[in-house]
Image 1 (tube, one colour):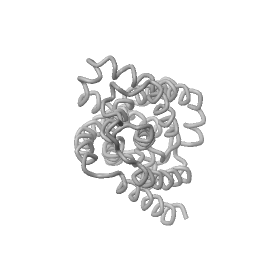
Image 2 (cartoon, rainbow, N blue to C red; image 1 turned 90 degrees about the vertical axis):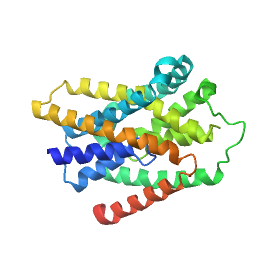
Image 3 (cartoon, rainbow, N blue to C red; image 1 turned 135 degrees about the vertical axis):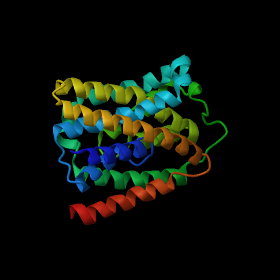
Image 4 (tube, rainbow, N blue to C red; image 1 turned 30 degrees about the vertical axis):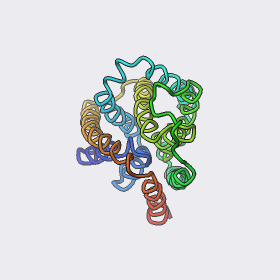
Amino acid sequence: MNTIQTLILSIVEGITEFLPVSSTGHLILAADIMKVAQTSFVKDFEIVIQLGAILAIVVLYANNLFRSVEVWKRVIAAFIPTGIIGFLLFKIIKTYLLGNLYITVASLFIGGIALIILEYVYKEKEHHVADIEKLSYKNAVLIGLFQAIAVIPGVSRSAATIIGAMFLGTKRKAAAEFSFLLAVPTMLAATSLDIVKSHFSYSAGEWGLMLLGFIGSFIVALFVVKWFLKYIQTHTFIPFGVYRIILALLFYFIVIK
């Protein structure tokens, strides 16, 4: 993998990590277009640049993360089921799921349909949760279970948690923000586990590419998160659903078939 490919992948990650379109799916598809082989290093690189995007959330939501104990309690409650499932299925995820174009395309397609259906059945009501601190612990854990589905590439961690939160009676903006915050412990754990499992067996050049990708995804994600929060206040998720379906079909008929 060269410097140009690294920059492209970091930009793709920064744009897609917090949108309900699957950052992992886009990274896999982008890598396939650029003929970047899904080696062990590339899979590790994709996880590390996700951490770069997550750092953007730490910067943007520093007050919530470091001052609100109630928010942290709910974030941790949601993380527990995801952490357990991710740890138990780590080997299967890395060996059989990441890099699988068929699974990625199918997940993108099905997830797109799910987003569209959600928008047609979801009606935001006055009693729905608008403040993360008022989210029940039961619902926080259930949202964590929704997030666990995103171990399947193409599902989208953001889409899974937002859909789960809205389905459980959380207002659109609060669902998106909870998804952002839940990404912090989730991706920290995923990245740490992945690096430990790899035994730090990277060359100096590979570490350089990881650092470049980390910084690139962080900068791009800063702008995307701000835009997304403004967007969802006046728009639905239907365009993202349609986009996922179109992307899945294009890749199936052009790349796979």
